[in-house]
Length: 150
Image (cartoon, rainbow, N blue to C red):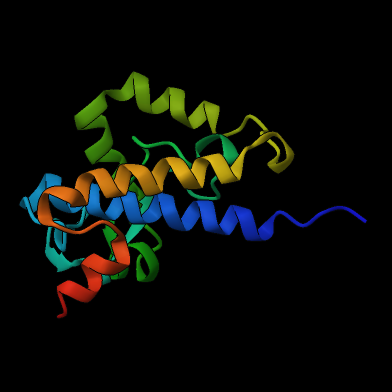
């Protein structure tokens, strides 16, 4: 029987998503607990932000791409299905049409779960999140959330 990798993949995604949200908050507001949505531009508490992908139906090739995943509010990411047209406009303005088109091609390349080191990805993004939070006297994402209630 094959070993399930659903758990490790989810754990890696959670660590990556936390880093994306903290990074996005710091880049847009200077605070680790509040940030702006990449598509609507509105400011939200981190609890109302998600790690939204530029490319829908994401594959492992772009799942953990640091440039393609940004903070999006729940409304844009879920209710409006990521607002792909607006998201793409923002990314083209930031990186250029050529780079965005390249990412869209890369998304089609199959990369299988068995070829990914999910524990290493988890550790990488937990460390990166900790590095972002240390100047604010937090060492983990959950500690930061507890320290800054809505």
